[in-house]
Image 1 (cartoon, rainbow, N blue to C red):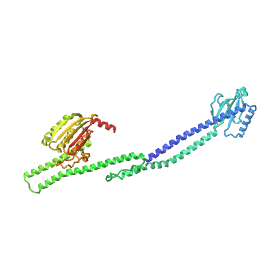
Image 2: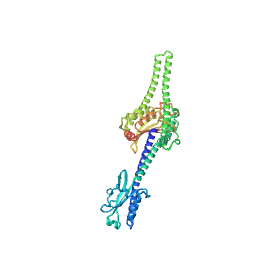
Image 3: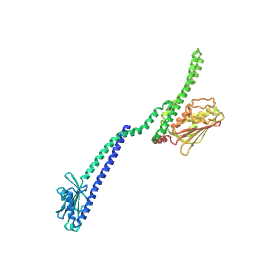
Image 4: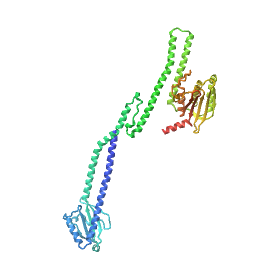
Length: 467
């Protein structure tokens, strides 16, 4: 990664320098060309003023002769010629004869300068009419040119400097780019080293955002959030494993103890039958725990394998209550169904969730109590099905953990369970993309509410599209 970034850095420097150098070079060449044109125009103005005087033509001859002898102090060689309307030379610079023939110049009406090359030399030429009376009478016109060798030499020197400077910039860019890139990636190295120190026994470690540049703060916060989720999941897994071992160890120990007692001495057939019947109870308890664990495992991995259909809440609740009617009557508890609403869900899973809630309510509701199952539809189309009892209630500190696996409230009741019933209810509601909530008041009862969305399958698909 550092090598690739360094190469990109070098390439960007070279591209930027090349573009700037080319721009400056072309601007210089244009400026040189413009300065040559301005110099020609200044000479044209001077010649016109000089020819218009009485002794101007003689002065012009003397100036041309001095330039031919190399006595001109100017930096550029100005070449001039005056011809009449017939093309006959009136006066000219000796050093332009054979170099710049009259045919090389543009016509007098053309105000643009013309470039001309001869024997490796570059010239800028113009041709203008002379406006003084004598010149107009003879139809004189001025042919003037400037030698651009010095201009070209200046452009070549500048081009050479740019190439040398570009080569130096390239040599400088190679080490500097690697230094800059490695210095810029140093926080990533520190970030990687900090993450490597986090092990299974140090999941509570969090990275300090102040140690890293501000650009990395979102990444640090994301890693800290991930570590918080991993720590929470690891703690739940440890708690889950411990509870699972406890739930399985108790019936297995009971079975082993009964078997040891049975084998300690000879027994009658009735005694063996009693031991087998007792063992069968423990087997049923083990089978129930394993069945619930398998259901939760499938719920974690197969949340989409549901048979959604539109269900009538009143009808479904009535059928579940009818199943528990004999048990409730024996316990002296009345079952009531209120409300009517329709929702989308899996019939089998809904009945299982509702059965778990009603079974819990019957277990913890004393004789003479009531269990009311009500259904209602919210303004957003969601359906709420609430199971309310008049039992002993649950203290508020237990409510946040009520739906955790193997969590059981120590209420002093003689009833015991696996602590998986409400966890299954929560898993079923998550499979429906809904949720479950509980409210309770100690000594007055508990209300558990199932929240079904308008259409779980549509909601789930929309959430996947958003992700």
